[in-house]
Image 1 (cartoon, rainbow, N blue to C red):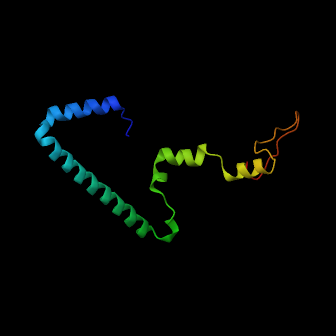
Image 2 (tube, rainbow, N blue to C red; image 1 turned 90 degrees about the vertical axis):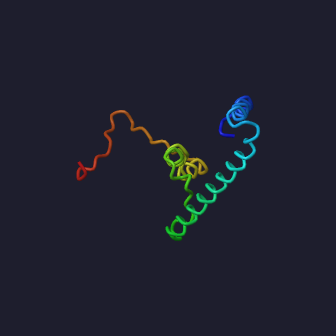
Image 3 (spheres, rainbow, N blue to C red; image 1 turned 135 degrees about the vertical axis):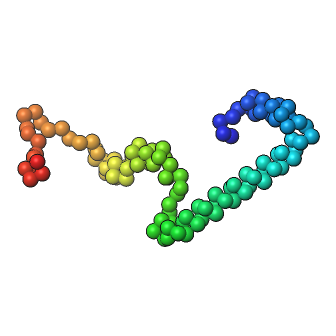
Length: 111
């Protein structure tokens, strides 16, 4: 949970009791619960509004894919379908080296 171990959780609980006191701690926990539930509800509504406004073309859009870290992982680090198909067909998706002495093909119009 959030990368917090059991020891850190105990330390946080002790600090919370010392800061807020044992009398006000349950009230503070209830208030925090209500605030978190409202934030979750707002995020859920914003996501559904965004999907509705974007239309059916983006119905399969996942907001986690818009995170730059997830975008790079999905599009650059994962193997693509063409590589998987080549491996399934027994082919190799790595580029072939030219024999020694053979010149690479050149498109004169593009240079």
